[in-house]
Picture 1: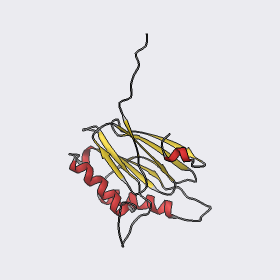
Picture 2: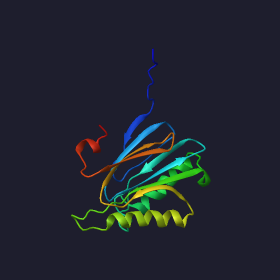
Picture 3: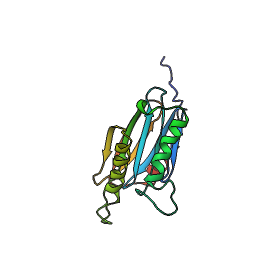
Picture 4: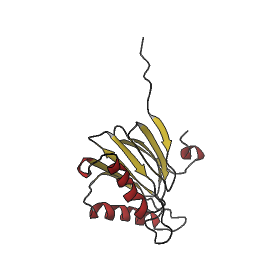
Length: 162
């Protein structure tokens, strides 16, 4: 008789403009178009988090929807929980181009993240950026593994992790 394996991980759906970090095991999920997400994993302490930002930077009323707020906050949260820069693995995702609206915001979002990480000498271990398709991202913050689904059309169930 086979033993049933129960997945102990909770699920968390990360909306645009939010940052989520936990030392508890989670499947962190989000959906990206031109937005960018950074998944960060502490390979020594075995936990991590993710951000999801919409625009590269803001001068007025900055908040988590902007990379210049969201990225530093993500790193501050990891540091507060004991992470050291040398122990972090970074995954960069998103930044697709939507030809229908003729916007270059996706590539600008990716460029902002790349420049910020380079400025602080933080290497990117994997990336899935650009192109024409949206992405559904599932990050296992306990193992540091990522699943990326490419989406031609984003459906309601993609947004709510069903």
